[in-house]
Length: 411
Image 1 (tube, rainbow, N blue to C red):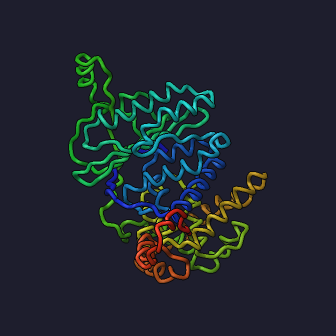
Image 2: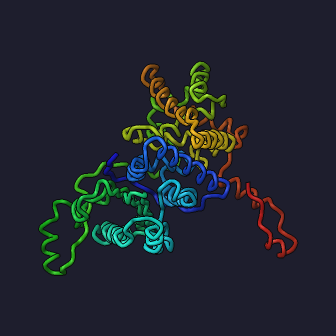
Image 3: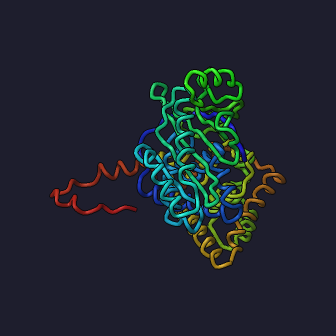
């Protein structure tokens, strides 16, 4: 799953509300655990280092499908969900945004103390990759997020993101140890950000003469980047449009929710009676776990699992989200007891969805699908961050500041 690419990531402010953050942690952890169960830890790192899969991953979790906030939210959710079980899963996540990124060396050394890994080597790698992306690539983006994921076998992936306040854009950089042979010769699996024309890239494979000259002057090895990139261009518009989605692939997923015979058979594959709308979400989750790398070129399609916190393409359907989480929890719990049928049901669902796509060739009407989701949103517990603001405005002011001593209820 080695991937090289560039994508536009508009800077997007705001926070993830608690009702979505807790669900993102649970769903992200379940998808990660499912990938590890079926394909192994190395495969999960490969997926993290693929910018297309990563963007789809954040989208299926209910984040805004195109914005820079996916990076912070995904890595934060994974760290909260996976680290308490790090020794069991053999996967450790260090670093994060801002101050957390500066604690990465200490966190890596603590992981090394608990395992047989070389802590000094991991810290050196962390610092070197950060300096490469911040200093050796003069593209105008300053690193503010650095997440280091390492397995018990000392294989690692790094996701870090820089910001250009002048252009209001972000650029995400992906690394995977399996793809790095020389830190000074095209080391990235991907660089995600808007193309800004010609830049100085001292880690480009063609920059050897410049490197030798700098070495002679500074006696220091400059770090380097990509010779060829695959472009993932995330548009500035916030809404999901027809052009953002592969209509044939979405059509196969929507058939699970709207074609009775297809829904009945899909439910049978999962060995569990589920609502048709939940089958739609599970089909997209199944693709996150089992889909081939080529299927993630349209991350917006994965927003049809659980919508987006800002209401694009539709509000987050909490009832569907929770039903999907319930299925995954039950399947993973049974798998720990050696009962893998339900978990393997996701693989069967992914295979079946692709058969529907190939043999029936359904093409979704994207606008109609969005309109339908918005119409049924109230019946599915649809919620956005704007609903939270309305509730705060409507809430009566507390009579006493003493009430602030007690936490407010969260749902």
